[in-house]
Image (cartoon, rainbow, N blue to C red; front, side, top):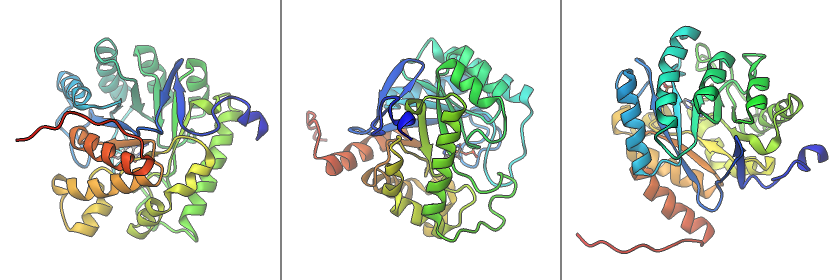
Length: 299
Ligand code: HH2
């Protein structure tokens, strides 16, 4: 533990990605989602063309995205797996085009080391691995050798099976124990602790009550002293509570984002960047009492 702690930041206020220090505590960061997929649960099919994906990503940056997350394989419950060739063909051109155009770090949502390697070569600096380095034994060394950051997410089961019968005795404790174990495994595999972000995996092998307990208990995960990423955007637990389809879950998402910021989230992964920027600004000001004022605009 001391060895891990001595590597640098032990507060979880920042992380490092390819030599860039990314601060995420005082003002939580917004990660804009770019799904280059035909079947994502909300925006599937909209940005499958790489030019459209790049244009969408640039729009998200203009709206205030601090990080972009490019994904080419849907993780929605029951989604069909995508071959490595197909995932490479979807992701790499988008990352390569964006790397020269946007000033923000680019994350790639993949569980395959070959996709991670190609994306890191093309200019990405963060790997968002929803399997937390468990599904591809080369993934940890690819991340370590590139000096990239990695997001380690909790999931019970696989996307194919995860919603069949999720079971926990005490969900917050079990997810925290899992994340702690994966944090140690990543460090053992050569990834510096300063390069690791943790994510409790909202909606991944969890029932409504599990998602609510995790969000309410989020501050427990801050004891792991790594930045926390939270992905609630338009997810089905919001639909279960409001009765609304994904395209009308923006206000439910807003409530969950505000609560997540209050409980210590450092990165919010969302589809709607412009609205989330205001939600995060206000929630973070209430949480920390630290803020800057801007010129007021009257309509
Ligand atoms: N959620 C989704 C995908 N990737 N990665 C992390 N780290 N955390 C999350 O909560 C998370 C994630 C699901 O959302 P989306 O990308 O919109 O849908 P799909 O998987 O259907 O493409």
